[in-house]
Amino acid sequence: MNPSFPEDLPELPAKGPEILTVSQLNQAVARLLERNFPLSWISGEISNFTRAASGHWYFTLKDANAQVRAVMFRSRAQAVGFNPREGDKVEVRATVGLYAQRGDYQLNVEAMRRAGVGNLYEAFLKLKAQLAEEGLFDANRKRELPVFPRTIGIVTSPQAAALRDVITAFRRRAPHVQLLLYPTAVQGEGSAEKIAEAVMKASRRAECDVLLVCRGGGSLEDLWSFNDERVARAIAACSMPVISGVGHETDFTIADFVADLRAPTPTAAAELAATAQQDWLAELGQSAQALTDSLRRQLDDQAQSLDWLSHRLQSPGAAIAQQHLKLAALQSRLQHATRTPLTAARFTLEQARRRLHHALPDTRMRRTQLSARTTQLSTAFDVHFAETRHIFSALQGQLELLAPQRTLERGYAILQTDAGDILRDTAQLQPPQTIRLTLATGSARIEVNKISPDKD
Image 1: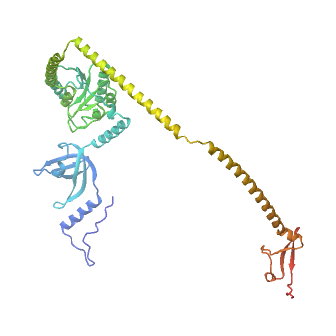
Image 2 (image 1 turned 60 degrees about the horizontal axis):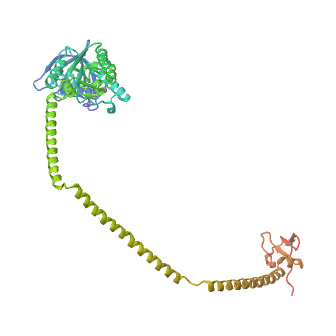
Image 3 (image 1 turned 90 degrees about the vertical axis):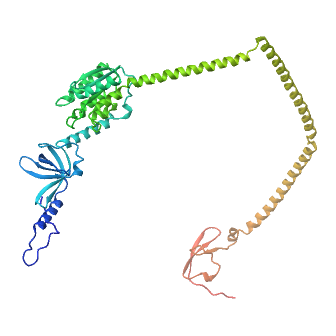
């Protein structure tokens, strides 16, 4: 990188060099560094780490061949998720600046992470995207936990504190649940393969209703085995629902996304796997009390209904006789109801038939008149047609006499210009001119060379 000299430095006078103060020089160099070194990630080892009373961090970042001072102010340091120690390998996101009072250039750190975390996080995101695209995180493949599990399997390390927390939680909340341990390493080389094997073993044996995959908290590197693709696919293929309880509430692993349910801690996973015995007993007591109250209400209602029905109970013979009376009354009403409307309808129909007979007109005379009029009309049409034909023949003869063709046959001719105009006057001629001559039979073209004046 070839840094350019700042444009706003004091200009040198035309005559003789200008003398800069140390403050002016340091300010110019500080602006030069700020302009030419953007925000970048820098890796190194921490040494000379000091945490001031103000909360600011001061340390040196070094490698095998060089070192540089660094400062991280309190507002930025509070966002770092760990406490840096002497010799830690870290990566810092910083700008390059100059501490003007001492003339030392330093890094102004804005973010810090453990060395290698960036690569691990990128690998985490890549695998997460791949498995999400395959559908391993889809909500529709998540299975419901059994309501009353009898046996629960646990995949974790026998020496892990998480196992003690889970066992304590089950003894306190659900001592009736049987626990099966599928021991495995949860950290270190080869642990991911062992975790996947333990999950597949539990799936094959199908000895439990729910499977817990858990371990305590730790750094990203400590929890990295649960970000392994083999573990994710083993959990996805497990024959029973899986609860993931890895790390603390702020920790997320690939196993959390693939599992049927994610718990923030191992203890929370145990609480989600089985309902507390006291809760079951309380709910059972409430159900028993509700059943007793319901049965008592039904018995009271039935007793009251029995008393009411006993007052209404009468002799079967009297009830049958009463029904016979009702039946006879209904039969009489039915006969009367059907007979009366039928008689009235017959009478109305007979009256309508008589009125219709008297209202029908006598059409015989009208038919005779129509026949006579038809004959008269036919005769008049024939006479009119004959007269019209005679008139048409006479007009046709007159038209034949006046036809142009008959005139031409008597020796006359029609003169036309080339444009088709009929010549009626010599004024229309402009010699020399060719005109068309139409005779009775055929036509000819003649040339007019001279026009003779009229002679009276």
